[in-house]
Length: 471
Image (tube, rainbow, N blue to C red; front, top):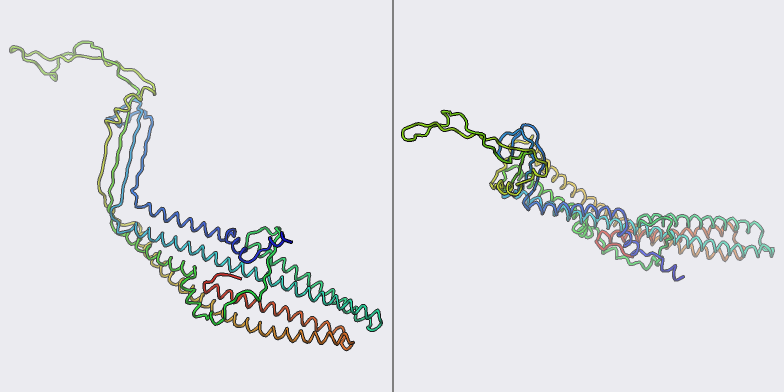
């Protein structure tokens, strides 16, 4: 018995478990994390952009040597390095507006998570109370079944004694059968309600599960006077997560408009870069061989020696070269990289002139989105007010029905008590007794239904007031 008691689930345990395991809550949390990533990325947009690239390869045929900028027909091994950076100096606060819009969207996503949790808690409470009601109904119909069985036992004794006809016993046997069927139906409905509750909790339908059954009359309920709909609406419109999310998204769209508008104006940025390159051919000069002097040429000029003009003869040299392998082509890499190292720095202005009307269209669409957000807020507030006033009306009606059903139950109980005594005295037929008993059972079920409905309606009002769900 102790182990079974430990396995009972009360409403608090159900709600806490659902908030941790329900798929809808987990999905909302993923959306919140995605908004956080976007916000964090927007914060990093203030950091300068930087990129580094390098390339290495072989050139064949006629091409330009990147280190001499001259044409060559030799095979070349080349490599280049380049680092560039840029930073926005002024862009009409476009970055600040983007960051602010992302921050507000993150806060709206957090409100969405709270809304999902609140909606889930209300759904769990509804399913829990529905299962609780079906459990109470099982107890009621079991009492009726027990009464019918006791009446059948007494009637059998009186039939055997010859004081009552056999028909009385047959009628009660039929009633016992009907009551047994009612119990089976109530137990089946209770099982279905438990499955619905387990689905909200994301618990496998085959897993054993039972709920605690607190006395419904001990469930705390605020006085109806403290839940006046105008007051409740004033609290809800300020504190309800859905209303908070709508307002935060409206503010985010206001910032987005400023961001898009800033993109219509020129922006100032600074840039800088570092670069170097290396190149070597597959032909290496190993030396030179003197093979004589070239014939005199006017192009070489003359030398005046004691009045005698002597033509200058240029030496003729044969260059000695050889093909080298890929490994040797890397020779001199360090010195070339050092000698070819270069830097650049400067300022730039980006002036948007024409982009297919995309920027202007984005600006106009963002203004329309803001108007739509205002309408969403207005509609959501109207729906909230409607729901609260409906909930209040339903709560008042449920209270009246509950009070009326208690009076009906009391009258049915007195009628059944009289019917029982008259039946025992042989002054009432079995059919009339069964009818009186059925009326009492129906009255008890009506009381249970009305009581649970009243409690639920009041809990809905408390929920709108911001008190959460508690039993």
